[in-house]
Image (cartoon, rainbow, N blue to C red):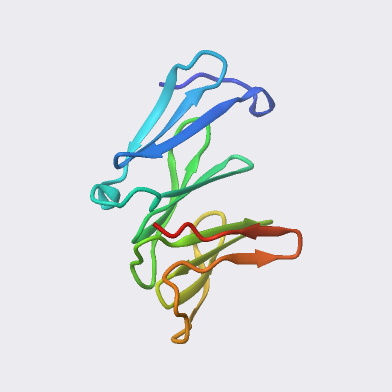
Length: 142
């Protein structure tokens, strides 16, 4: 489905779960797109994170980061995480997407291109909180 509506008039509710991410028209409840997430089929509750940032829907699963157009659901980019994690944490700030997964701390672009990755062997928690000045994301320990 595709409807040509100016970006400033878009009003999409994004729902992720049961190995899918879908966009719904907030005014009518009509599902306008849906995308399967096969890597999330056996995810534990709370293990899929979603962030809408500008015209991007960023979806983080145990193994992958995906970027979708918020109005069409079209895949813009995807990347495998450096290490799968039970419940990774994502923080979006400006053009940066920070991900903490397992022992890895990673930074991606909004198009899901890897900027850098470092290993943190000293983390004692599987899903640490992330923060930059004025923006914080608490871990969702499931």
